[in-house]
Image 1 (tube, rainbow, N blue to C red):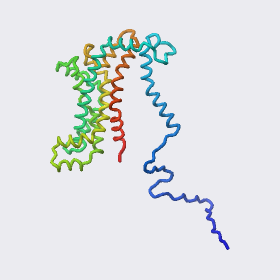
Image 2 (cartoon, one colour; image 1 turned 120 degrees about the horizontal axis):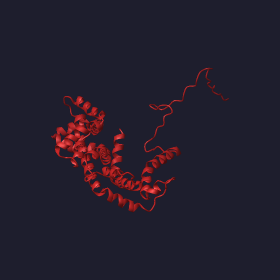
Image 3 (cartoon, rainbow, N blue to C red; image 1 turned 135 degrees about the vertical axis):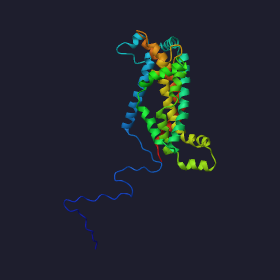
Image 4 (cartoon, rainbow, N blue to C red; image 1 turned 180 degrees about the vertical axis):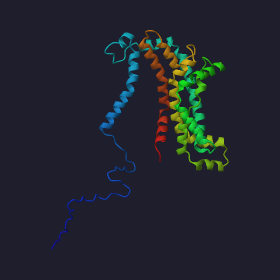
Length: 307
């Protein structure tokens, strides 16, 4: 004789209890096991393609416009494929704006600013993050407050200072005012607060390391990922800076952006030659990213992932 267990029915108006879940897991939340990876769907790939094409389109249009003449660039509809005048336009832009000297000057300016920014901002960020001294919070607040001041307000006194120093038209007038920035100090401080434990510093002090040795052997290796990111941002900003170099330098000693301004300063500038000059100015930035791209991306990921 077999017996059947009575089935449980919920009373009218009552909601059945949810199925039990594993401890610590919220209902409906996706959990990945060790070694598993998220896989993108069609929408993810479509979005990445759109973003990639949108990023490449300006550079492609610069190449197309630099390879045609002025009349063809201004046609409607404009050309969609590169033409055959790229070499001649590049040569014309190179000769008209003295781009060779401008590129050398930009490398000197951007390289000097980047190296100085990494050095001073890392030291200042370490001091604000891990060293205890009177007035630390007040000084950090003052540094952050300088970010709210428009740079146009400092143009007149800064120009008077470089004139008194005899730096008018010289690269020093562009390099020295931007050797350290408030954003770099704040960026390195925030990174070192999370990435550099106090125990590591105390262990170095117990071993008899001086402050200089701690910075060289402990702080700099830990700060390397953030320094790569800050270095990339600083180099790109210094390379593309136009406003202050345009005021401080002259046509005989320009940076790349000032030289490009000379190409478009005529009453009827040749857009194809201007685009050829813009293409030349973009190539060094692409070269920097190709060489240091792996370290830059690794630094971004190291700063984004917290264990």
